[in-house]
Length: 409
Image (cartoon, rainbow, N blue to C red; front, side, top):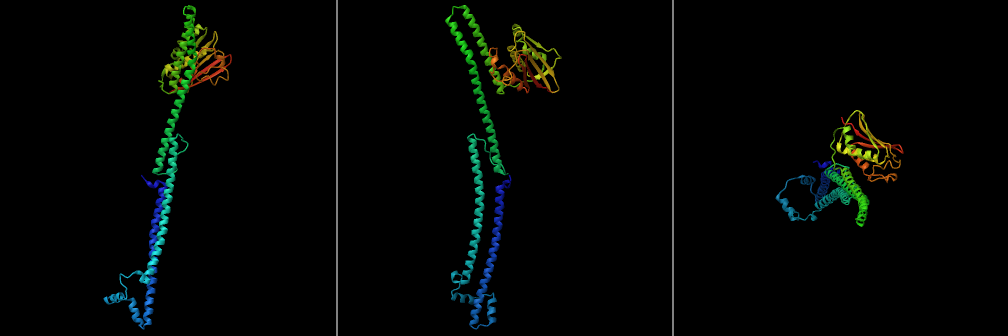
């Protein structure tokens, strides 16, 4: 861990180094000032002594020898004591020493005040910037707790504190992602429940009505038989609706793992339409399967056959008597395509972009079979395997659905 990577700490450390350097330089300067003041005071003192001795007729040689002498004696100490000059004498009674003390105190106070102010200003600036950084971080964290993730922690510099901020920001991003996922899940659940509730109202109302009719005429065999059949159809519609909603909900929630394998395309198509050929024959329609060279496709066989079956069901719903549904396929270096075409009534251009929506029914198809989930489920299955489903349609000529899967080498 290197604390000097933090820009503020680095600047404050440089400031402290400069302060210590100034402190030593101030000490040297103060010492020089004191030396100069001391020299001046001693010269003044010696000058005063020499002048006084000359006034009393003392020879210059004696005065010079006395001033330059460094020897001490008991007689001298006694003489000074007799005139009141001892180590216990108050400094205020020694004019030259008192003046030197005043000069020293003045300069020490001056340098002390300047250096103290400089240190206090530097420390205040550092702590103020640090406090602003902490206040900003606290404000951003408070926004995070309230669900506002628009603000971000400061990460413009290096250092331990900024690494901490980056970690908090990363945590906030994770929380935001989880919050959004939770909101989407709640919205998805809300819409799903709303869709199921809305779609079940019609068959449930019909069942209640059929039950009342049968209850009112229990001895009328024809009425009982007729509305029993209608009850059976309503129950089948409810079963289809519930099963379709469960499947598409699982697909939307990502709880289904597609198990891809190599499948024979003819077997896949045969499985998809096995239960629809009887219906087609009873309605006077025909399902034609291409007999071109057999191919293999990489997909989830069960789910893909259901997607194809749903598209074929849709084609049967929208073709008239003697209608034809044609299923073919082709391979390119990059894609494997399955085409399902019919010669039915076609899709209106304004409806073409909505047909894969859940429960969508165009106005002209309200009287046809189906619950409006087949194409939506087929799209979810194909796209869940990384494929693409597209549609082309011409009014009164027919519709072509194309399922495209990437060729896996």
